[in-house]
Length: 144
Image (cartoon, rainbow, N blue to C red; front, top):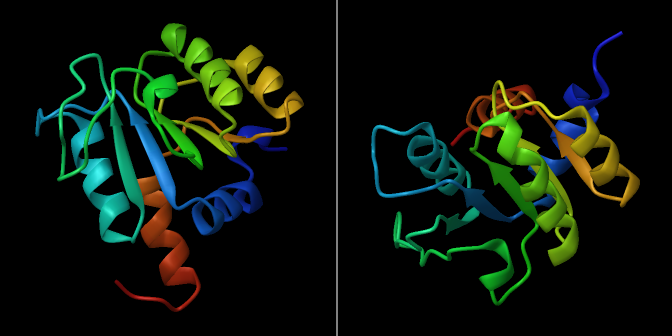
């Protein structure tokens, strides 16, 4: 049996239903994975919200230092921080009323998964939306 945090139905639901994505760890550094993943999210019609201590504008979107600073609803919180720092970000996602949390490749925190899903949010860990979005669109006969 696969891990519940890699459930393809949950992945599909988040990708289909979440339009506004806070990308935690997104900066103007083009060599970072978050930079490229945010571009891909935009290419698939998602609104990205950079979350980084510097609150930089990235890909034309105003950045914020913390999730709590964002003055509008966030659908999904995409987390680009090390596993040991990711749990508190998931807790913040619950506090701001996000619908879902997505931990990037190699980011795992089973306790955070339990807390987040117990609070009613959908959650994916150890996956990348920039990989899953094209796969989902291809599977559904869609093109970009």
